[in-house]
Amino acid sequence: MESGARLPLLSRDWGARTWVEGTKAPGCALHRRRIGQPCLRTALGLAAWLTLGGGAVAKTYETREGALRRVFGPEARLERRTDFLAAAALDSARSLAGAPIPSSHISYHEAWRGDSLLGRAYLDTHVVRNEHETLLIVLDPEGRTREVDIMAFDEPEDYLPPRPWLLALQQRTLSKHLRPGDGVDAISGATLSARAATAAVRRVLALDRVLHGSHGGKG
Image (tube, rainbow, N blue to C red):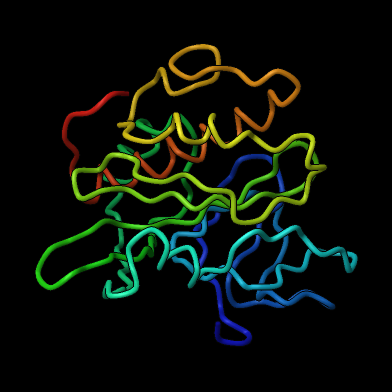
């Protein structure tokens, strides 16, 4: 993986900490600044060593390249895309996600094999309890979730969502029921982790629907 990769981020006004591309905090391996918000990393630029403030090193489980090749295969062609939402489209995404999305600048990756689209990939970084996690959220060409994986997690591992629970988030379309205790099982002892993960999935699905449309699937 390349050294010093810059991470294009879409910041979100969600009442916690955020990293934004283009600034660098002292002692931090990422270009970032804290502005009191979490963030949606809409391009796959997760550093192999994700360093948080105060010199603490986040628990990083997989590199960007490894995750992409695992999901899409070694022969897939990866292309970065950047879109800008008009005001009406941004309002629609906010309504669908059920949460504010302050930025209209959205970057993500598409994976191709020849002329066939394999899917789109997003990273979402957010606070779970007091610390951050980063999820890789991959959608198929129809806008359904194909993969939801934890890339980095800085909370105690007792709060990690179990793998079977993450697998249950596959093949989902956007729905107001995509919440723990409703359309998704709650996790005993990790309620905030379940809420954070399902909120991240809704955010990505909402933006992808506005940008690309969507089709059927279980919500």
